[in-house]
Image (cartoon, rainbow, N blue to C red; front, side, top):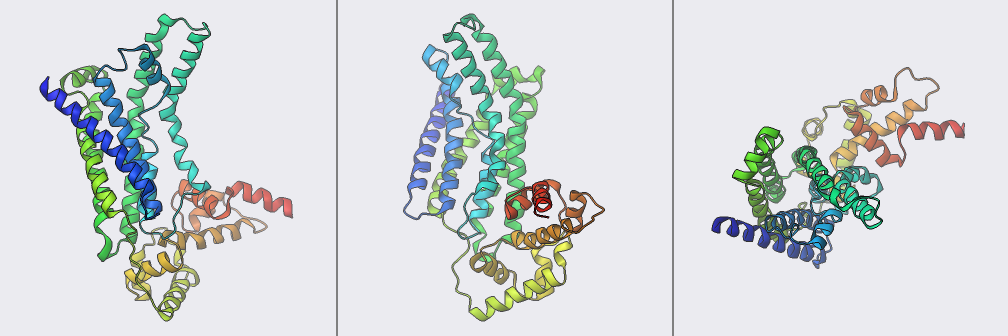
Length: 367
């Protein structure tokens, strides 16, 4: 019992520290967008830790008011964390990075976290209006509980996918002098995802779930998560600054680099290669990787992927505007260097503001 109280206190202190640090990061004098993204990550993790503490203290079961509040106010909001990890990593490399409308699609899955609260709100309103009997509370509560059990897998999957994508972004943008914090940040989440998976597998098996929770509860997940809060809070606050250093590059080098990139990527049509990497361009141009990254990030305001994708999108648009094309839109996208339909759709809308189908419709109306 003493151990349980100690662990609960640790989780509560972690939640409180996370909430405080997230507020400090958001209000930090250095108005960096990366700070705001990290603040959002810490805030959501801290809410989840606070939720477990409240559950373990039976606060939500001992009061009707608290029970109603727990039904309609979501504290476990995990789905946005994956996209926030990815965009936080990107913000460390792209000067002036900000979320814009085209990024909203990444956060639509948050409805998965909000859905139980919507069901709870329906029950509360139904009970108040006497449409739903109060004694049905357990039935509705059990449905919400079972929903959250199986919703944990897409939550885990989302964070894992976006952490992997963020890792690939770090690989394509890393510079020897600035790799420390982004690498540590992503490694921390990768380790946590492995721990979560070890707990998640037996948790999702009905015959093992109750025994697992009776034996170790959620501590194997939330104690590492609390450690993450402490670690992210301290390191994030101290190291929350752009990873790309403001190194002055002379105008001649900038012009030479951009001209070389234009030649090998566009004129030599390397952008058609779906497996194209920054290392390939380094070999083709003979220009050091850190120089290319610095020129693109600091002076062109683009990541390497954005630089390449702009040519791919222009090529797709060109082929779509031809009087006749014999492939599907996805087929054209693959021929132009994309290797994923989802990536193509997202990138096309990012550059044009509309989907490929909408673009075609607009062009046909103009004609």
